[in-house]
Length: 60
Ligand code: FES
Image (cartoon, rainbow, N blue to C red; front, side):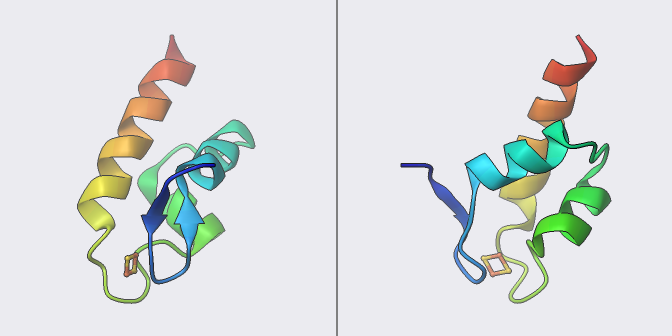
């Protein structure tokens, strides 16, 4: 099971990954795609970090 990274919307790491895989190229785009950080915003740091990591990977 994939870890939930945003508990407000129940967004998992897997969903972030999918979003990036399908073309999201920035935190903003992931946000628009998955709704992460749009409620309490507590997950922002975590999602940003994770997105960065994924984008770095895809750039390689
Ligand atoms: S945990 Fe992501 S908006 Fe609240």
